[in-house]
Image (tube, rainbow, N blue to C red; front, top):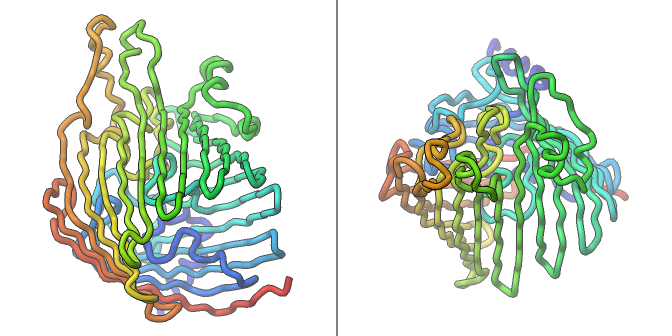
Amino acid sequence: MQRTYYFFILLISLVQISGAQTASRMFEKDANLATRDSFRTGIDFYASWQNSALTLYETNNDPLHYIVSPFLHYKFNPSIVMNVRVNVENIRDEYLFPEKTYWGDEFAGHRGGIEIGMIKYQSKWFDLHFGRDFFIPGKRFYEGLLFSEYNYSYDQIRLALHSKQMEISSFYLDLTDWPTGAGQAQRYLFGHRFTWKFAEGYFAFNDVMLYGGVKRQFKPALFNPFILFYPYQKNRGNVESNSLMSFELYIPWNSYVVFAEFLIDDYQVDKKVPGDLEPNEWGVNITVGKNEIFKNSDWKMNYTRVANRTFNAPEKEYEKYIYKNLPIGHFLGNNFWELKSTLNTRWNERLVSELTVYHGEFGDEALYGAFNKDYFNYTVEQGYSERFPFGTIKTQSGLVFGIDYTALEEVHFKGKMSYWLHNPRLKDSFNFLFAMHYRLNILKHRPKF
């Protein structure tokens, strides 16, 4: 009886606890709430067991993991939608990487929070997205460069104007404070996205700025999508901030697909002082694929490279692209490259398998730690260069195989295993996971409008 009491106290107190990272990959980021129902409420139950982490895209080695996740989906009318989701999960504290620890409170042997709490308005020309939700703009075939799909949900505001050929959007993401010797530094992330659509593809330009400081104020003017952040920073007297730009290109053609991202963090033009010898900070992410390469099988291959120091900050730690102890950008941070190839096969309507061959090389950790400034030890005449990845190189290569089985509409099973020929970073070379997801639909109603 006492345990039941603590469980209900936990649910009531969740409104004051920061949102928890989605650990289950069995229900998607939007928790499949974008249904045809005008009203749906229920509870997702997820449980898994593993011997240890299977890939580098995970945070914990703990064997047992379970989640209880009540949700609510409601359509006020065809244009206005509300989604709410709460997560309660068991405490896991055997971390794969010491930097990527859990962010949030613990209560009665559990962790949890409001993972999604948002209202979205959509019309023919205008969208408004307000509240807490995951932020993953654009297409995804693997992990992205600019915003990680493995991070927590953000408290956000997003405004967008769109037509058949173009979309212009501005967004604000509320970041956690950062402790400094002078007190807590407030942190803000603003961004703009311009998308040009053609056929079934698109080209997009993203402009993002993270700024902060003790008692720094929110700047509504930065919502203006026509303010480019780098010139704004310079013209306002070198406003302290860390800005990024990125480009995306998505081209589907018949059964083929090409997706590319290119990100620029810092690029040195002048060569006048030793500080100008700082190596360029950038990233590239390229995916090519073909549907039906074999019968009922789709194939894709990805190459990702992120330069040393990218997403880091040379002076102010609170300008690092980190949110709740996880990278805002690519989940693996920087100073690495990886190549992976995946074959996805649909055996029947219920059974799907996925086989991935992986190889990657990683240098020293260069996001959470200090910003390396070895280039200051050289003159402009001497020049400066460094090998990539920088530091001690670790090679990770192996295979990952997974199956998903849909027993019923509300019941899913998952099995996954990995075997690593070179394994300097994971606890075990052979890993396996078994998982189950059950959705209890309490009430649902189809719309009359």
